Image (cartoon, rainbow, N blue to C red; front, top):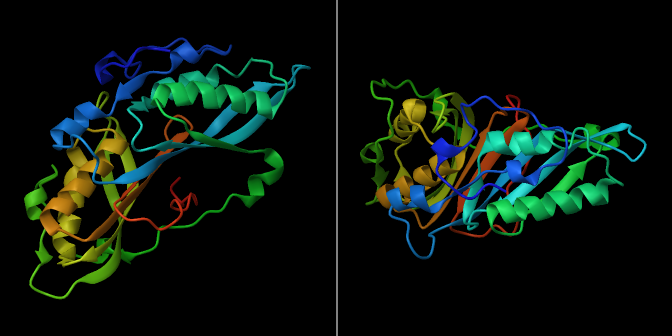
Length: 279
């Protein structure tokens, strides 16, 4: 496995030879702490959460050489020391394409060991096999849609000073939603499209200011996980809710989608992994 390093040393934006035989060294971990330092996050994190990866292009061979396919769900804890760069993740999964395995248990054993080592913490992995593909649900995030607001926007970089809340009024509980989240890959600048759900209890957040802030990510270069943590911290510091959860569903690239969730209160279960229409 590649030693944890900086994003510019990753396979992103570089020609790649696609390995079709199992090769865990293709995984490229990147420490989370560098970007968290930018947010002033040292010591105990003010949130917990999970990054939900869905891998739609997973295939291997059975012992007779017949191709097998599945969809994998990988759940990596937010307190793991690393993320895994997504192109390296794709290259790693492709390395199973011509690899013979004795069954799904053998596949899961390799995936759990390799990805837990890459993230630096145990990950949860489940497979959906073709006979269960029809059971995969499709649904949209719930919440009041911010995108209905007719606002004027001239700046496309995130500005936390835009965020406003009614601190002199009684607290509220709301779930707000936008489908207008767009950021760019930290290395290649390619667009990443997503929907973001914000659930909070506290001073009522000015919805126009929140939408303006979210649209500000449109020309911002960060990985998915880092954008969600930035949104979480900016809202927490500017609006001071007692409870806050931020969940983003990003569209897939290279057969992978990444869906980070960060929260400072427990609901007793992780967020739904229902695929939305754009995924």
